[in-house]
Each structure stands twice: as structure tokens, then as C-alpha cells.
Length: 129
Image (cartoon, rainbow, N blue to C red; front, side):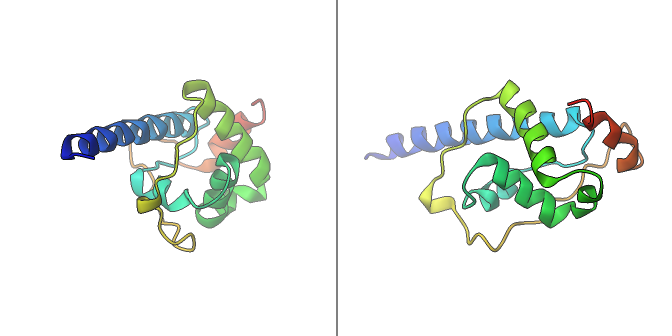
């Protein structure tokens, strides 16, 4: 491959990652969840087989308090359904970008004025999903 072919492949992958992130982050916002994923988070979850399993692993690792009210399966399914409504395809893994699966990165929560002050305010909205 010549250098321009590498650039085109990287550019296409970057666009795909951005589309995936936009779909996930929109799904989180629609459900009132204060998660925000970036490329590092998405890449750290890539070794886990299945999108729903990736979401569940993230919730269990970083937002376990939500599991007191909802199951990981319910939350991950609700998120994935919303994500797929915006962008149905799954991100294809790139071998050169997959880290050790034991290093799921912590993702800082969003900090915006329009956020709710607690998860409890938003959790009931998930019941009708």
C-alpha cells in the first residue's frame, strides 16, 4: 500500500469511530445518563465481544450504582437500542488499536448546566423504554 491508501483507510476509520461515538453519546443523553464516551473508551471496550456486552462491562466498571435500580442487561439493551436507531452498524475492530482488555479506561462524566443533579431524577425515564 502506498501512503495515500493508508491515509484514506485511517480517515475512513476515524469517520466510523466518530459516527459510533456520536450515536452512543446521543443514546446516553436521550436516556438521561451522564456518560460520555471518547475514542479511548470505545477502543478499551473493543476486546469485549458484542456491543451489549461492552456497554454492560462499562456500566459495571464505572456506574455500578445504577445496578441497584436496573439490571446491566436492561440498561445495556436500552442504550444499544437507542444507539442502533441512530447508527446500526458495529465498529469493526482494528488489531493495531486494541489494548489489553483489563485496562478499561475511566471516562469522566459530562459537566454541563443542562445536566440533572442526580441519577435518581433520570432513572424512572428508563422504565418506559
